[in-house]
Every structure is written in C-alpha cells, then in structure tokens.
Figure 1 (cartoon, chains in turn green, red, blue):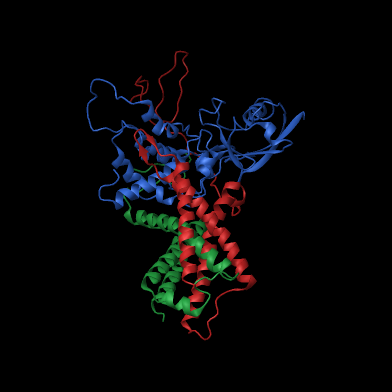
Figure 2 (cartoon, rainbow over the protein chains, first blue to last red):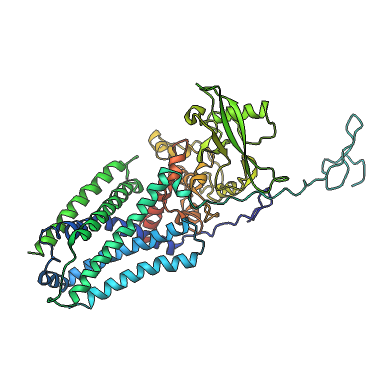
Length: 132
Length: 159
Length: 242
C-alpha cells in the first residue's frame, strides 16, 4: 500500500514488518555494552589514569605486577570485555552522530563506525592474547 | 450519461444538472494538479539550537573519550610486550589531565545511562510498576560497589 | 509594557516564490496574547493572505504546531510576553515539506499513525454481551501515552526524521505503546511486527527531544525505549515477551 501526498510529492513507502532480529541484537548488544561499560570503566580510569600516576600502587605501575596480571587468562578475558564494550559503544555512537550531522552515505558511515569499533577490539584481542 | 441527467455522480467534463435558479455549473471531478511542497532542509547547526540537542551530543561524545583512554591503556599493554627492562607506565601531568577529562566523560556516561536504565525497564508490580527512580538509585549503588571492587583488585594486584 | 511587537512570519506562495522568505508585521502587544492571537490579528487587519492551521486555541486540538524562534511550539501556547522585546520568528514546523506559509504537508504522519494499528485488537469476531472491565490502576498503565493530540511537534524535534523520512516516529510508537499497555488489547504481536521492522524503533537514537517538546507530557522517548527493551527480551528469552 503506498499513498501519494496531497502536494504531489514523493510516495510514502510502507515499512517492512519485523521482527528484524539483526537490528534487535545489534541494539541489545549496544545497550548491554553501555550498561556494563557504565559500571566497570570509571574504576579503571580512576585508578590507572589518575590515582596510579599520583602514587597509588595500581597493577600497571610496575612491569612485574602488570605482566603477572596480563598472563592470567581470567584477566585477559575480563580486559577483552572491557575493551569490546568501549569500542562497541564508540561504533554505535559514531554511526548515529555522523549520520545526524549530515553525512548521507549509510554504507560509508557504517564501514567507518563499525570499522573503528572492530579495529579497536581486534587490536585489543591481539595484544591481550599474544602477549608474554 | 446524457446531458440533463440528474444522477449525483459527476465525471470529468460532464455538466451538472441545473440548479433551481436555472444556473448550470460545469466542473471537472478532479482538481487541478497541486504544486509541489517546498522540501525541508536540515541545517548543519541543528544540534546547537536546543539545550537538549547539546546534551545529546555530549552524551554521545563520552564514547569518544572512553575509547580514547582505552587506546592509551592498549599502548601500555603494548609497552609491556617489550619486556621488563624498558617498561614505563603512562604517567606525568598531561596523562593525568587527559585521564581526569576522560574520567569526567565516563562518569557522565554512567550517570546518564544508569538513570535511563530506570526508565527503560518497566517492571510490573501487580497493577503498578517499580519506580524508575528506585531502579536508577539501585544502579548507582551498584556502580559504587563495582568501582570499589575493581579498584581494590587493581591495587591488590599492584602490591 | 511595549505597545507593539514584531512578528517575522515565513511566507511561501508556491505559485510565485522559489523559496520561503520572512515577512515582518507590527502587531499590538497584549500581555495575555499568544502567537496565534497575533497571527489572527495580522490576518484580520493587515494581511489576509497569511496561511496557518489552528482550531481550539487551547492546546487540545493539535492543529497549530509551528516553529517559534526556532523552537517547536503550539501557536496557542506561545505567549508573546515570553519573547519580549521581539522580534518573534514564526516559521512552519521543521522536518515537514511546506505547502504554503506556515502550513506543512502532514500526509506522511497520517500514514504512519495507521501503520501501528491504533485500535483495540481482540480475537473475537462478534461483539459479545457486556463491557470490557478495566480498573483505574490498569488505566493508569497507559494513560500517559493516550494523551497525544497529534500536534507533530515531536516529529519536528526529532533529528532522525530528516535523515530517515520513513521513520514511523515518536507519536506513532507512543500510540502503539498505549494499546500495548491496554489490558483490553490482544494485538501485541501484530503491532510488534510493525515496530520491530524497518523504519521503526531501531531508527531511534534516543535524543529525547520528542518528549521535551511534547505539550501533553506523553513521553514518546520512554515509549520507544521500553518497546526496544521488551521486544529484545522477547527475542532473546525463550519464555519472554509477547
């Protein structure tokens, strides 16, 4: 069913019915990543970024403690989750904002935003799981 | 249809029956093609025009701040790959300043997202629903607890 | 108190103009006048060719949506005293094509309302004896979303509409939620198919300004986010959702 508007403008299309599980999963992933990130990110920036350099004994201050932690598989998985949440949030938000700022190409913006997110997560995975 | 027919249906070009005053009207059944409406163009500065739009952009920008700090953390991990001799953790006043900024952005993300979690979850309680404020407060309490736990682990790991 | 205030009204005559342009009118200032009063004065005394929609002049019909100083407002709710000393820019609602002056083409919105099936859907084919009973507490569940007056200010405020004109939009989704939460309705699955498909809830980036500009407190942003959450729960959990 299509309709012509009274001023002879473009036809109004009918949306395709769902459920669109792909979009649903993408959104659910984003919402989960955003909530999880909201809970775990501040602690890392506070300790490692602010208090650590100011003298608090954060685990990354010395090679010994840092390497020991990074060799623990549970730590690797946790940190991968931390990075994945952060880069997934980045991807989704860049996707929305760049398009809302007027960039028209859906494919271009999609490749850019999700490319950034994927790149960050892949680099994180490589660094975490190929390390000493 | 012949002329003078009093059928109420009028098709294009067909004359109406005469009115009681003897005046006949001839009118096409379809109106003339209307002119095209002037399309709307979104100005590039639309997001500066309302406080709500600016706050939205700030909320979305927090993702850039968080991701940027995570890249710095990845730099540190990459440094650790180089072995113990040359390892230098990130530090100094510039790094601390950047971290303070990113921490502010991360906390703004946490504040906005955890409050919104209260609104987005409709938890029925009989004929009512759990108050969104209560859910948000629960989320903030959880944030405090998780932050304390992770901080303790990071410091214990550094001992 | 000033004697007069200037209104700068967008004019567009499709037969004569290549694009819209502002035209200024000096109107008498009254402390209790709204923009709609000023426009009616202009039309009656100065320029009868100004076109705009209005009806109830008390914020219930939803006809007089317009842009006042760049903000989506009902013309009958925008008091001149809020904009002193002026001039006041009166423009058609954003995000809609302009038919003439302040009148915009709302046919796309009319279609979108229909797509969400805004009526009680039940299984029975015949109307049986007796009424559907509903407690006040049950009515409270959906009352907020039933207050929409179709003024379209939310569409005017939504930054997604210009980039996705097919987006079914805040008012339509809030209306769907009104029926979703109505204890008498059994059409959840049907409506959910429309809402979780293309051009619907997944287009929304939760800017939230739709709820900020709503003159009736409908909170369409809440309706959309709740629909996202509940529909994904329904997709992911084997027992969950409807």
